[in-house]
Image (cartoon, rainbow, N blue to C red):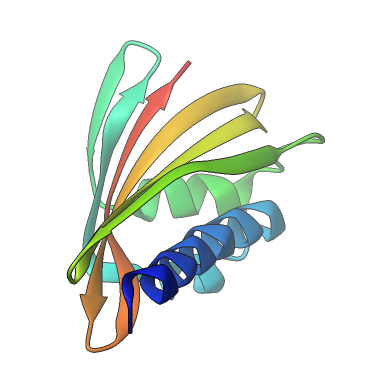
Amino acid sequence: MNRTDDIIAVKAVVNEYVAGTLARDIARLKAIFHPNAVMSGYLGPNQLIGSPQPFFDHLAGNEHGEGYGAEISHVSVVGRTACARLVEENLYGMSFVNDFHLLNDNGTWVIVSKLFHHD
């Protein structure tokens, strides 16, 4: 693949994250995260570091309300690594900026980390 194709593929993974979040489809989300992925960031003043499982659990158990939207604001690919920034609005009434790190794992882009900040 060339870099343009890789950028398109990374955007597809992040768009799958958005679609899975919107649908509250945990299996769909787990399919795009590496099994050893980490999720870290701030929810208000609280620092959270760990696996994405608490996010999956919260999403599965709670309606996120009307008006959820998200936009990819940046993608960078260097070799078999990538970074993507996703800005989310109105997820549980909150806004987030998420930085995803992805690896190309045997031809498939997977999220290995999500760093988030709640505005």
